Image (cartoon, rainbow, N blue to C red; front, side, top):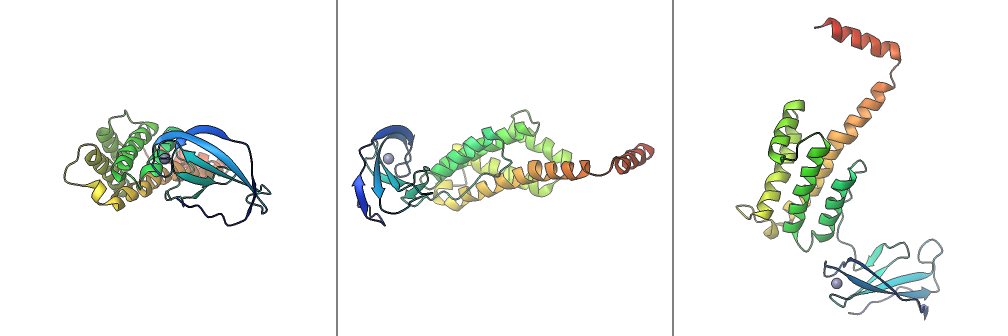
Length: 217
Ligand SMILES: [Zn+2]
């Protein structure tokens, strides 16, 4: 593989380190051997270094900025987790994102797992089917139920292949990322925002509302 560097390398630095990470080329978790190229240009925030890595599984090279942003091969995963996504859900979301181009089926299975954890975060028991049913009973939100059931059904089909062939149609897997973010947005972000603005109402207004609702029983 030939890597063209957009600036002229001044010298190859001698520092060589290694670590383990998911390779952006072969998508396996592998040892990376890192080298550094000093350039005569500012690459990132006054740092003139490019980093390049050789994956010891596929022996291919990737290139990175000093802050560990992948620049070659061009990163393909475009799905960013919602900023209110719970941490344990985010782990599966990001792993799915790292493999979706190589294995849409694997990504779909991971996103089903992400949904299962999300349901637990929202008060469920971990049994995804009944958790969705109960969450629907709570809010009667038809769109939310459809989003959750779509992720659940496609994720199940990815694990036990049935009528939906996820690998034959990667767009199906890509849709799941949007739906997981939709669920986080509606069940966590939006509700948190409503609570916050409601709390900011003057106390006497909130008291009037409480009194009204008590009286309506
Ligand atoms: Zn590799």
